[in-house]
Image 1: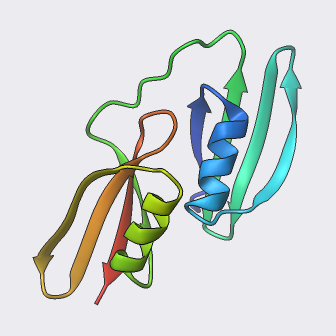
Image 2 (image 1 turned 45 degrees about the vertical axis):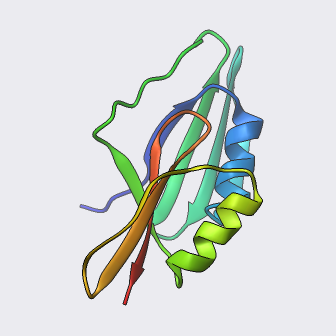
Length: 120
């Protein structure tokens, strides 16, 4: 079995695409209409793919407080500077639970926690 992607329902496809491209660094691979009032976009490549679904009939999305998506970065400090420069608030952190890992969280435009992790 092979993992394909994570699917996220989003409130605003343009805002979500901007976040996942400009902040996370995932490029749009595919974008298409999914039916009346629905648009679908895939971002990322290889084993890091996210499907973003916008449905005009869905007015609210709720991911819950206990789920996050984690992305490895070269430098937590540099990534914190980048997200701040793009107007994205730090949700929590940075944390360094041991000498080998450091991470922090932001929220995507839909309220999903995104974790940026530096393996040291």
